[in-house]
Length: 366
Image 1: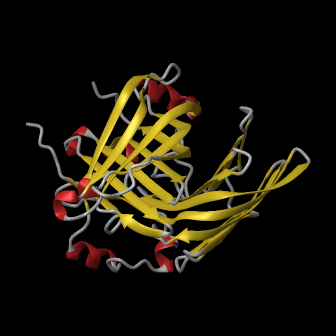
Image 2 (image 1 turned 180 degrees about the horizontal axis):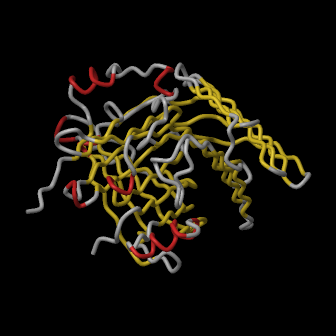
């Protein structure tokens, strides 16, 4: 008989004690190396993205292990750094370091080095240096919204000895200055950016079927929103995550008040995965004396659509096909709209460009 196991956000006092963190307060060490010694079954990365003033988007990721495609969580520590630039004219620049043995990770704060590439910060300001082939990037990120996490930031999968997937939005929103040297040309651009930190102790495809994740700035608002759907073993449980800040102060972040909606869903022509043109996070705390906000993401373009199996080579590729592995990753640009719907509030919507993703590890749900 098939028994479904539990899946929940760790949020009770015993959870805070277990992970040694304080409710409502984030310490710099939480953005440090969390999977020491990076043993079997673990993964970890430090992520950054930015929307620049010319409309370009930049994504940089420092990974303790290259778990993309055929890389698994049981491999030894093999750090890589990835760099992606998407220009408004459709030009895509992508670089990945080779696997390097020259690296270091600090447990005291975000202080990551992979070869000549560095990612350093203290929850308030960050400096990122990337040097891969003909691409050199110097980026600074200075906070406008304080560090935040949903409850403990740890999602627990399992009823007895649960696995975990952890997420810390170390910098929900910050001012960016980026100097990009590509193909012999140098440009310095301002923009707004975001940094988060993820880690866990089991392969994500064993825990999570898929997730939508988004961030955006519109007028005086900054939003981070996600909806994570667990694998069938964990009851197809949905975990919504939501944070809305206004003028640099968090005004809504209790995910128990969030209803996630998606409409105009259709198969992506390349990956075959269902993609929603409209995703909505409706935060309604009015029954509890709080506020009502609706945040809507309207897809304009799919700028990345990858089938994970395409990066699996050799015998692993054959095995992946035999077991029906069809994981996919898609990244979108479009518009985010924030509405304040509480009685007496200004109902005028605020709209701006945004960046979001759909990560699909498991089989498509019918």
